[in-house]
Amino acid sequence: MSDPNILYVCPEYSEKLYPNKGKFTVEQLLRADMVKSAFSAGKRVEHMWVKVSEVQVENQLVKGTLDNTPTEITHLTFGDIVFVPFKDIEDIWIEGQVPESVKRLLETKEEELEAEEFVRSLFEGVKTIARAIRRNRIVVRRRQ
Image (cartoon, rainbow, N blue to C red; front, side):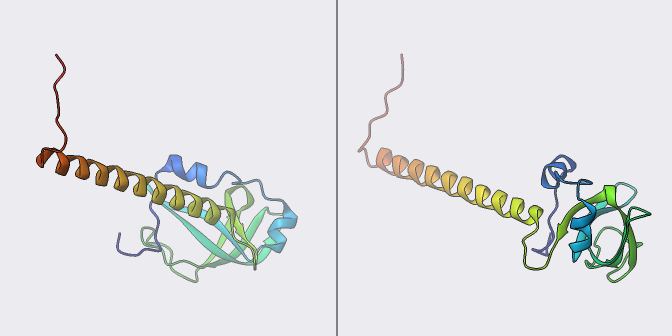
């Protein structure tokens, strides 16, 4: 994983990341600058943004151009014209607003950083205790 802008997630987390999948109203879709959807080829799946060019209400489709460069899906390239069924839309991006999935990612990243800091502080505490034991400042007694 060399590109820091690429996020790999398991399918279970993907469902948590996009709880509004298929629940956007026509009004929301008409205001959207971009929509996010999963694209697949075999077992490979990528969640990518599509720049909206047309909302086809009668067909329940959003037409647009792919706004990501696929890394796993080889039959698509950046700028390809794609059609996304309303039911497959995972998130929307309206100019000036942060998409919900991005907010969830930031919250998750913050939780990961807090957990990492907690583990780091525990490790530092263990190292301090180990140094004290080595210097005979703490006596360890075994239970009998």
